[in-house]
Length: 219
Image 1: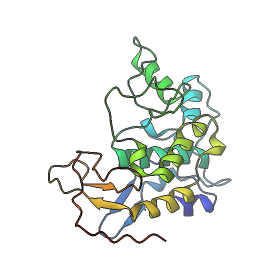
Image 2: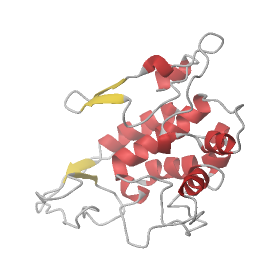
Image 3: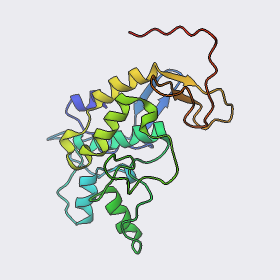
């Protein structure tokens, strides 16, 4: 994504269906590039895919305003949603809050558009799930901070959304902190070993069994 955006290009349809990942080789390939937007050459033909469309585009489309089009800033919202879903297995805006009990389509349009609210918003808990869940805190302070920026300030101010390069750097550092869970039936399989929290898997609650002596190297 960062290479694409640095070239001034917009994918316009980041979603879980439009990339291939090889975990063993640690490689990701974007597909479905028929939606690629090249300024001055290829105009945007689609608005995006379902839950991944940027709030400003969802809101404009719901009002019947066709002037809002995919852009790099809209891509960055889709990218943030995709990363959140991949790492935490839930949508960052889809919580228990209802916006219209009588009209499901309007409820979705408000949930992902004009009234979009991060389920982990620190100042408004009205969309937070009732049960405890592994939130962005489970990914460490740096990634949690980028996610908070993406889904609070970034929801209303597209130009303030984290750049793809910010995600690249933070996720690379995150990768070095991941350890496997020892519980065979754990749904998460792996988790981030955090410095200031107990060494317990946030997915299943299994504690890490350390040897008596643990060498720790911090650079």
